[in-house]
Length: 284
Image (cartoon, rainbow, N blue to C red):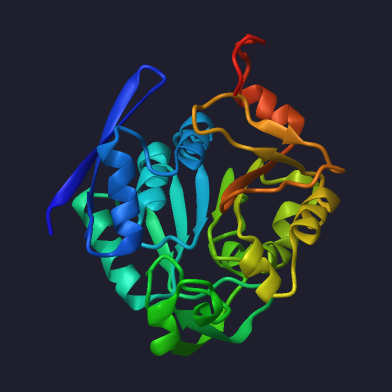
């Protein structure tokens, strides 16, 4: 497998990462499609990391997969910083370790368990259609997952919580938490109540996977309500690095695809996006 070079140019500096990507796998083909079009993968999430992370920061990556965001975060926080990467799939862990080694990144701790709302045994399903679609619900039920319907792969695993793992690592509060767990985002955040109170983690990125949320008894409203109770506002991060769009608490999002949400305070966003071009003749 040939390594793909990714150059991140931001804030007057440039850094290079390498990832081993297999375009026969659907989720990795998606990453390659972004890169071949001259864009960062999930540029909304990538640019939030580039905007917010500094040397010495602690980052939590829940659903690290093969390590695109883990490697980016580890590069940005440097040897004095740390990344805590949660990834339960053994195949993904092997690829994650390989990509970390490829970049000489030794500042990552891998937690080989699913994160949830409590410590205990859970059923975790490996997705036969996409290694990026593993979940705490059966992906055979997701429209179009034909291989997963033919080949179900439930695993009994021991889940942990963010509160428990942060305490195990010494109790230091992260600068940013990124969660991509195919609908288990609310469960993960419920297991981080000790971290999040008073919006103490400045930036939380969570995928909004409406189908997956529903499978686990949650919804957009309950997810956003949980974060509002901790003092967070909901923002929609932009692909072009523009000021994230504030979604008022009474406004429901009607996404046309799976999107990412940024939970932060208005003050935290203002510090990282201190200026915005105002041109009413151009639509965003």
